[in-house]
Length: 328
Ligand code: AHM
Ligand code: MG
Image (cartoon, rainbow, N blue to C red; front, side, top):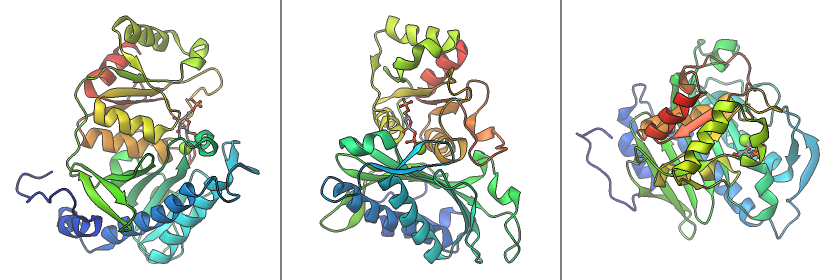
């Protein structure tokens, strides 16, 4: 956060926080603030549905696949509808790309922002009451308003994000976001129906002892990744892996740690999507003092060639990511 800014106290409502910080943004005219409010509102609806998941028939597979060939869950599809609807109605977003949708959605309006979203990440945890999340990135539109959406409005590098964040549907529901001026976390107070500031100016510990990787896949890791995992063991690190990226990232952000999804024999470029998952978390990690790399380059520098492009992902505490990268 900027030193000159008067810090708002814990308990400040998200709306007030957004309003108070609006002038940090170089194009400050309220549109980005409204977008963040739209996302927060949609997340409250999704949160309500996630919380009811065992009671009504919204768990289980949809019977369809997304663009990556993965089984869509009913809640994946529902969350996609909720966020798309909120962003369409809001009018600030001109286009939307989503992990659940094959091509970009032209919202056909005068909006100046493009949104990339993974509406409900951690699909395999939906049915078993384990934390899941929503991940979003916000970019400025490049083509002039009024013209059809161009490829360069969509395929932007992570460095061009103007805001990014996630919602964690966990033991409490949290919204964590950045507009490039630090990272702030808000906890949902369900009786008030409000997100309130609970984690101001979040910083990830520079070093840590937690490593998060699906070791069940270790036979298909490259030798350098195997060696790094061995290094973690040799140094008595603790393994923690939920299998929900947002939850694993959030824990490591608070406690210090590294999350890794490397290339595997099955997924030569790793499993995670650059535009829906990695860019947003890389932006948050860097804003909190951490790092994110694909092993060779900063995640935020990668120029996407495809909407659904995947990348190996190493994110977390600065020293841990540097160490992992030194193996790779
Ligand atoms: P999804 O977008 O289909 O939910 O997949 C992403 C998830 C991440 O949340 C998680 O870290 C990873 O996939 C787990 O994958 P695996 O089960 O291969 O370890
Ligand atoms: Mg996902």
